[in-house]
Image (cartoon, rainbow, N blue to C red; front, side):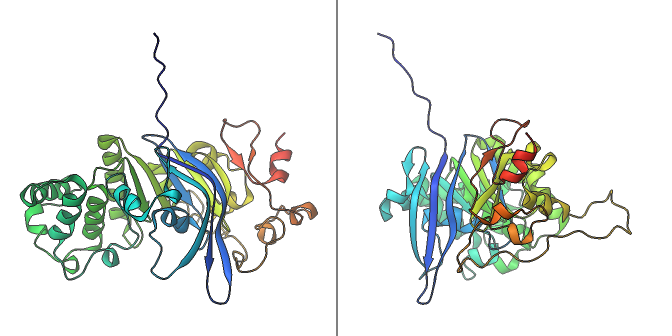
Amino acid sequence: MIRTTHPAPPPLEVDGFSVTLHTPNVSVRPVDRVTYSVEAGEVLAVVGESGSGKTILNMAPLDLLPVGVDADMAGSVRFEGRDLLKMTASELEAVRGSGIGVVFQDPLSALNPVRKVGRQLTEGIERNLRLTPAQSESRAAELLALVGLPDPKSRMQQYPHELSGGQRQRVGIAMGISGEPRLLIADEPTTALDVTVQAQIVELLKDLQKRMGMAIVIITHDFGVVSGLADKVAVMYAGRLSELGSVRDVLVGPAHPYTRGLLQSVPSLTVPMDTKFVGLPGQPPNLAHRIDGCAFAPRCAEVRADCRGHRPGLLSVPRSSPGHLAACPVVVNQNI
């Protein structure tokens, strides 16, 4: 008898995922019917302006929204074939850390200021890897060395405020990978760091990804991080994907006017000093108000009358690689 083998599901499959947040006065939908996937060993960068929905998209399925936030979620978010939205609290807790690791945006606020670094690391290791306290201390020291912190045993005896911003971020990364996850979600891991340290963190994540073979979702607004680390890019605007594709397709041949505007806003050393800065005009929409038509239309230089009629979905970009999608019928039709 011939046995058929089924390929393992991707680490992450997001299908029609929406998040609606409720307050006493208003309801907003910061994530609206988003669909994408992340393959094993792949790095996906989710980019967009502040308020575009990047963090909520990735933190809400893990029940990592701020305390007191009332959220409704729809669609599905599958980790290795299991829908996170259908898990019980205990099942989700078991997945966090050992299956999905998280690196939070602000390492100073993510770390407990009154507990030593070593204990914060060993606590998760004991829980996720079922190691003894002695084994956990040894593993914590190994992790701190792995993320490039010298004299890791001494670092374990320090409090977060005794470390620099870059050192705290390395501790945050060590905590994120301490459960040996198959998927790592890194929320703005280079924010508030100087350029040299940013480059070191990017190289560290690349090295860890290769060593551990894990998939990574990195939330960022920094296209330098995107180009240096990611395989695929998802561009978000007003809660939806405006463009999705490989790094080469999106950065070299951006199809959506919003993506082009973001890239034009990035300073370049090759541009003459007296060149006028070109930024995105206007502001992102208020998601508490109803959006009729394309959400980017009020800021778009290529807007047409029919852009205000309905919100477009993702369409294949002609003469590009398979999987390069953009939510702009005007641009897509012009490229045919």
